[in-house]
Length: 83
Image (cartoon, rainbow, N blue to C red):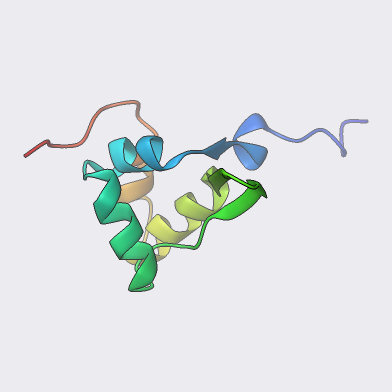
């Protein structure tokens, strides 16, 4: 069973407001970033339920940062700068 156990963060999904808070931007900015290919596309879980896999966002931030800098800030629980 140990091999089959999955960490919650591997399967966690978050909504657009949570993604926006994670990155310190507005929810509309998240949709623009997705359209421009700057963020991974969300997954559709239902007719009106759209979420992002937290693991996809982490991998994306790691690639963009070239290491763990963005990951450590994004997962620290702190809020990004608000304008």
